Length: 338
Image (cartoon, rainbow, N blue to C red; front, side, top):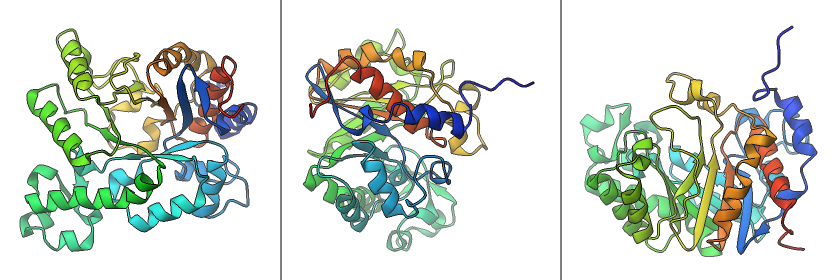
């Protein structure tokens, strides 16, 4: 008889675990001096919205699901903005559908972090301004775009998130740089340029190549982030690959710390030609989550705000682990509204 993989037991088993720990995650926690918000990096993945996985049967529309999610967690990460520029009206609807204290972290569009975008996903009016040699391509990089188009990408993104920013519901913009973004002067300059474009909009940076933190570069990387007070996104990610940044407590901003959990599915982490969700199809054990409790507590002692986001968004794996780590932290600290 085949043994069940404990890290991929299926949605039914994960559902039972999640329901047993559903209470603590619903409100922010007070850990040390920080408000700690725990949630997931999606609320709309098809594997998550499938019947009986996470949402109740009556949560059948996008509005219903966001309303339900926002009553289960105080924060969510929006990843759709990586693929398509956000629309201001969408942000306005998100405001209407979530409680006053609910927080959105927004992933930067691919073209804002040196990654390619499908030309067909760009707004129609911007596509019409592209040179023919770019318009004929399937994918385009920001470095290939005329400067006015690149500037327009940033402007559209900032306009799209403005309802969240002006209402106080924007947590941070996540600048997630690709695996080929190495620790060079050019890369550091790119981060500084992004900081200038974002102005007073809060943001955090995730680096996805281990060389940023090898023996040669680690000190320089930390000094650079601290100099500009840029929050470094701490990660739990599949070990043993070139992009594997080690799990560590690194707080480089006096305002915000972020932890993102990607799962530990090494065999699919850098594999091409597979559905994106398969990279993150990993359910953490309680022991694995427990490793992060002292790290989160340590980071929480250095900032007023800390975000913990589960990016293992296959089915209900992320929601289950978000609830479980909230319970582990809540066992040691009072709830914020207590």
